[in-house]
Image (cartoon, rainbow, N blue to C red; front, top):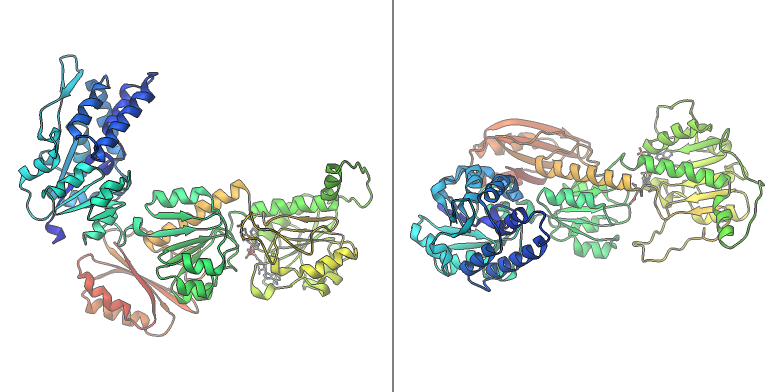
Length: 629
Ligand SMILES: NC(=O)C1=CN([C@@H]2O[C@H](COP(=O)(O)OP(=O)(O)OC[C@H]3O[C@@H](n4cnc5c(N)ncnc54)[C@H](O)[C@@H]3O)[C@@H](O)[C@H]2O)C=CC1
Ligand SMILES: O=C(O)CCC(=O)C(=O)O
């Protein structure tokens, strides 16, 4: 039925993201001291007309009278109009072009501005219903030519006169658009709210649509994306950098944010209806949270560590997890270097004493970095970067890792943690947060360190037994410590912090800020948002930490079927049998598996019955299945 419908679109704040008269005011009053005041009066009149407060014709004449408009101004806006297509209109150009014969543009605006946009959409000139401006011989605008559009209920009357075939669907943001259906000139009315949302108009609509994708979804038409992006909810917790919010919103998704972490119970509540969850290091994405997630497709850790997410449970539910493995590496390394120097020179205590008004100039116990031995535990991305910087500053570097790692520069691998502890003047922990690393450094390990040695932990709180460390520091066995991560970290900046390490001398405590630099947060936001978009928009799992990694190009000229399944024998064969039975012509296929999961991407010819896809869900072992158009 929807395919036979005629789609009637309003122009201002629907097809384009501006209101014509306000945009003309900006052009005509450029440089004038009156500009702001006149523009505000025009905007008020526009709003009153759009909410039905005053008749449209009256509002138009009053707004025109406020502007010294010329033909040159119109030409300029006409040239600027097409680049200002509303984002979801631009995403769905094929919809307009393929159905151009069944699209009408109806607007109280001016033909001269609408025409280039209609041309870009493939809508014929005779399907534009709009006002014509009148001009004098010098090109000054003198008014508007008589038109039914200026009369009360003008849009509805003009459309009725067209006798459009099939169901008529009106889409617009203003009251005059709502009137079209109320007056019987349209069968359905969608309040379009991507640019501006007016409560009264939404209340009068059959449905609100935040984008053209949503409109196509509700109308049962295949959009550019199988599920409208503006209906997909993303919840980003823990103060994720605004660059991610902007990037994801610009791509058309609905993004909600929260400043702090959520407790497990709160997350269980909030996760319902959420398609993508973004966290940093604190929110625990447990199996219980994943069970409560009825729509969840992906989780992004806007950080390096992923120990806060139950990766197996997520894979078991076909939920992809991403992180940003390198974006804050350098920030952590720089802080580790700075903290080492600060500990060697007792900077924190000396500074605190100065703030209390005490002057204590002394070299006692203060040491240079040069020539000291740095023991790095965990020689991954951070550990190996630290190795390079520390060596450049004149330190001797030794390291220990569970797996074979390339030793950089003159760094020396140690056969065991114990051997490293026995030789190091400074021990810096950069292991990941796996559960097995709980209390990696406890009383026994601390007792193996050189007397007076320093300990840094910028990895995860549970890696160090802080009670044992407090004792070793109190007894003077350990000379100082810099701790950035804690077994119990407050969920938000408003919550209190406590630790047995508080108040001890030569102990620097920082609130988990190893990766908290402007540079790192912005880089993480961009990287993680790109990974999410690549996964949602084309199925690409590059850098996914719990599903097989497959790098994919955009779908073009095909539909893509994404199938995540348990890695068990026969799934691909059964899937292909189901595709064949559904009459789908396979254009390309990739399969990648890891020990627990398989991921099959199948590009198929667009010519098939979508209902047939339902059979794919019943393929044994299916964890998740979606299509991309
Ligand atoms: N304080 C902060 O703000 C930040 C903390 N981090 C933490 O730093 C950790 C390390 O980050 P990357 O270097 O990027 O990770 P990575 O995965 O590249 O390196 C971790 C290394 O530790 C090794 N390892 C794990 N357990 C070990 C053990 N018991 N003994 C010896 N080696 C062990 C691994 O084999 C691996 O080489 C992250 O997992 C995260 O928890 C990361 C960024 C910021
Ligand atoms: O800054 C954050 O939120 C967490 C940083 C961190 O620990 C990580 O990247 O693993």
